Amino acid sequence: MNKFWKFTTILLAVVACLSILFGIYKFFDTKSKMTRLMPTVGTAALPQGSVNQYYEAQVSAVLVGIKRQVKLEVISIPSGLALKDCSMVYNLVSLPKPNSVVNCSIIGYPDFSGLQEVILRSSSKGFVNATRSEIPILVN
Image 1 (cartoon, rainbow, N blue to C red):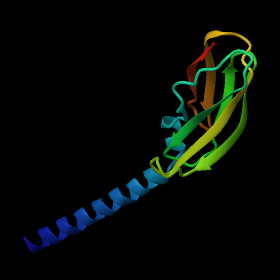
Image 2 (cartoon, one colour; image 1 turned 45 degrees about the horizontal axis):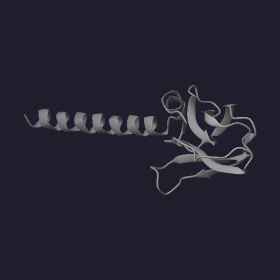
Image 3 (cartoon, rainbow, N blue to C red; image 1 turned 180 degrees about the vertical axis):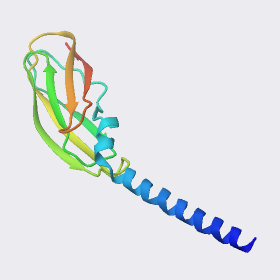
């Protein structure tokens, strides 16, 4: 009976060590993270603008779970506006770490009035997934 308990204890210790090692491997396995994580545009709406008046607003994209450069690209933007001055921030305090945030400005002079959309694509090199976001903007 004593040998049985000794064997069982050793076996449980080996299983526990293997579980810990596998958990550490999965935590640092960036390749599998890249298939399930995706950068997301964090801006849901833009402030109102006026035709032929200077307009400026901030948009951002966030990637939580890995520290990697994030890119914002314009798919469609109202005439007279442009995406400019993008900058990266890593491990922002208000988000779970690790994280990556890109902040950009939408600037210019809108040419037309009405409810319009800014359509952005957020991506990160090496990631399978990218997101497309449609953000409304009202121009008077």
